[in-house]
Image 1 (cartoon, rainbow, N blue to C red):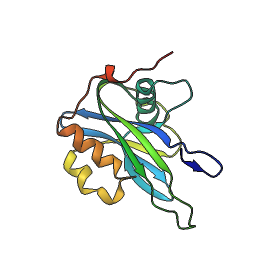
Image 2: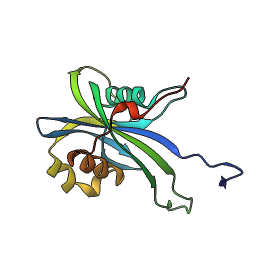
Image 3: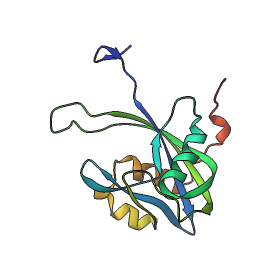
Length: 159
């Protein structure tokens, strides 16, 4: 087993939701590391939370949209670049889902750091790659647009 900083290594487990409606993708514009970046609705898995519940929760908290998950797109592992101070980049394990929008609450206060939710065409999102929070943003969208889908039953939370 790998040991990092005197403890067992554990990646940051995150979820992301690719929400597509009328040919556009739901994105968030958020502040991260001193920049205004683009991402899907995404965030960390909380203790005792299922991956499915986390994806629905994060989408609502970051965009004001209630969604229905329709499939699992994939699991992605990524290591962020080494920071300017020499500290190793964080490692992420992201579970991406595809969803359809159900309802929007425009009065909902969005999570800290989220500037706004916005709908972009796939071309607009792809062309803004220099603003993506990570390469995971386009990878999950591209896989989803290519038709990559797995049933949600693939993911099980065992009690």
